[in-house]
Image (cartoon, rainbow, N blue to C red; front, side):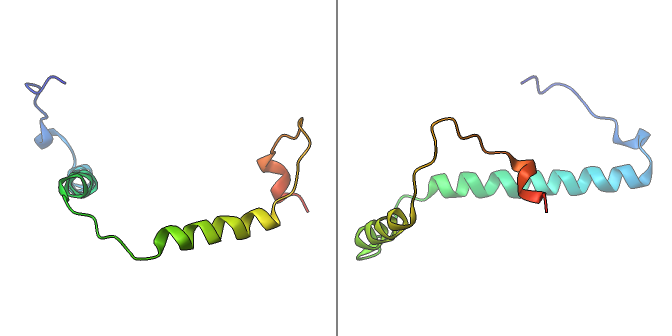
Length: 81
């Protein structure tokens, strides 16, 4: 990405300047959280987590059912009454 480009904020109205600053703060928060998560070197292991996960998915399988091969999910049909 070319970083030599400049933005002339002074040409914007005050409302647009405020929105731009808020959006910039949002981007800083969003992407700094991801980089902080990547920097974490140790991950706490929770005892029994794998067993709990296996039990959860086994329980889910008991509720599962077979759908026809040609079944297509239609989001619009969810909202029909």
